[in-house]
Image (cartoon, rainbow, N blue to C red; front, side, top):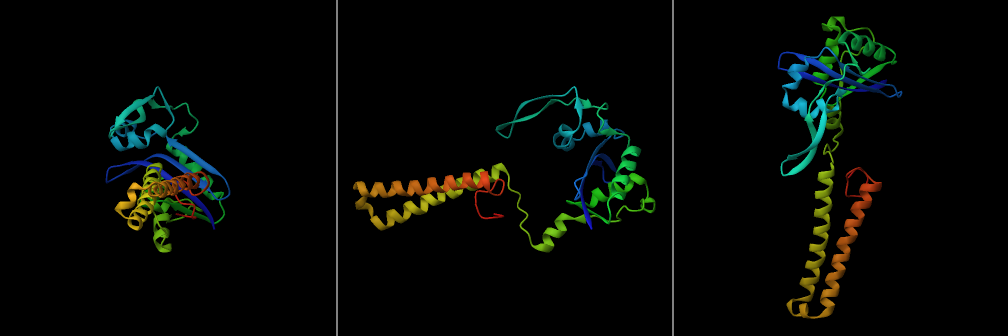
Amino acid sequence: MTAIDYDLEFLEDGRTIELISIGMVCDDGREYYAVNSDADWDRVRKHPWLMQNVWPHLPLRGHKSGLVTVGGGTEVRLTEPGVIDTSNTQVKPRWVIANEVRDFLQATPDAELWANYGAYDHVGLAQLWGPMVRLPEGVPMFTNDIQQEVRRQGVDTVVKTAGTYARDLAERTVATFVVAASDVGIAAGPADMFHASFWQTMGVAGITAAGTLLKGMLARAFGTKNSASLAKGV
């Protein structure tokens, strides 16, 4: 089997699934990406989630970006959305995309489709050619779902981001210092707080915490992305 991982962006209203873009990556190294020039762009521009999460990544012209305040912080977002750049070679009519996707799939021996939460993706893909009975030869009739395989294998699905990394590293560093300092305090007793040796030992606790901080920074640089642990997969 030759796996093809793919993803669709689409506009759906509970009754229809309208293609916006499609991206495919094959195990043999081939890639395909196209944007549907026939999409209802007026409806897309009225959809807040699509405008925030999909629109900025499409081929655009006449758009502008700037810093905006979001939840007490600032993010780079589009301040002027612009329009779809129809002169871009990746922007194509739906019928062209249908033909090219068909050729891409048919050029793959024993193709196996994979998608993440792919129920709507498969329907949107199949509808490139109309009813299910018109599915071209060589195009798989189902898509394997990554989430289903993850649950079957019992794999942890937590997605690590820069935000979770920062919180994880901060918690590890503080916890290391608190535990080390508490051990010193319990062993020493209140009276020893007035001796230099007490604070020297507390300094060692701080150095231990600094070591945890350094280890977490090294983990992100050389280990799993956005992980504060050097252990594989953590």
